[in-house]
Amino acid sequence: MRKNAYLEKQKAAKTAFMNSVEHVVRQYDIDTLIITMNEGDGYGYDRMMDLLHRWEATRQKYRDAINPDVSVEADVAQEHIDRHMVRIMRGKAPLIPFNERYITLKKIKY
Image (cartoon, rainbow, N blue to C red):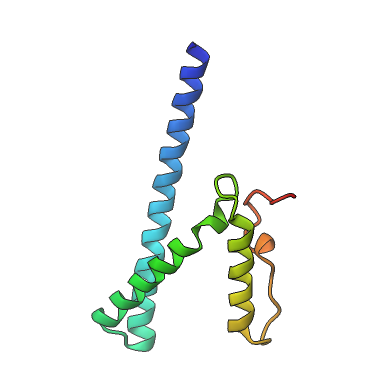
């Protein structure tokens, strides 16, 4: 029993740390994106907030892609992201496949 309690405590600490890192990186990304949109493109507050809300909805829509340990739909979400990227890039650059862009994620094996 003691070993399980220790492992659970370690897992909880790791999860808390990962959540903290994700929060910091996410907030930094949002802050620097807002500054870029304002300085580079002249976006005002309302336009930026609209974009950020739509961006969050898109992030949630494809969240399964970065959770292959949790989601059985991870491969589908990854494929959808790559398809969108190809469409957006319109041949201007070669697509770097999802598993090469996210090298630290667990590889999906069938």
